[in-house]
Length: 210
Image 1 (tube, rainbow, N blue to C red):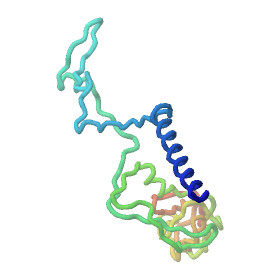
Image 2: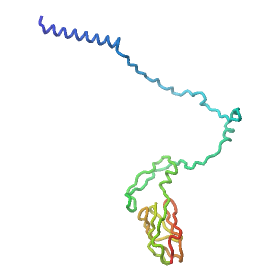
Image 3: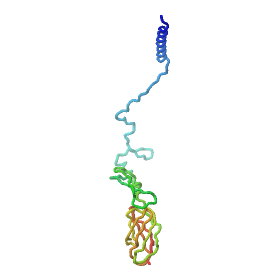
Image 4: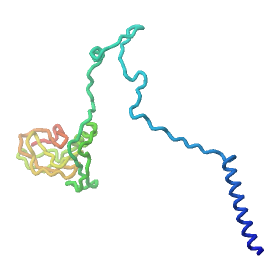
């Protein structure tokens, strides 16, 4: 018989013997791999002991069971200093590069409709304004003096009063500068007040009519 045929027959027989030995090894000696499949949790959790609470009050070494009325009598109202508030519609904040004048060039959503936030977070958007300087410090009783008010947290649309009378030609340049003209007023030192979105800021004796 041709030697090539014997070679092929031998190869097939060797492959069959190898496969049989591998199967025998996997069956008898190969390490087992155990896969743990967690069981599904129950649809309704089983309450643990003590979950259905009953309240007691301690007196000495004894405990007295309380009903709802008696337990409530042992509580007091508490005023939340920073309550949660819910925003009813989208609210936007204006943004602009530092050092540039109003108006603000771009709007972005600050609070989305339905969001719940602490009131302090909401109030943070309305920083209290401060007046640092009023220049010039004096002017005519007839009014018309060009004032430059410098400070912090001025907002678009801020108004100015000098001695309780509204200033004219008010221009809010940016959050630190306001320009305006003084109204007429009797001689003497008066307060200068700027009212922003957050409320009024005042500088006592900030301007003197002479």
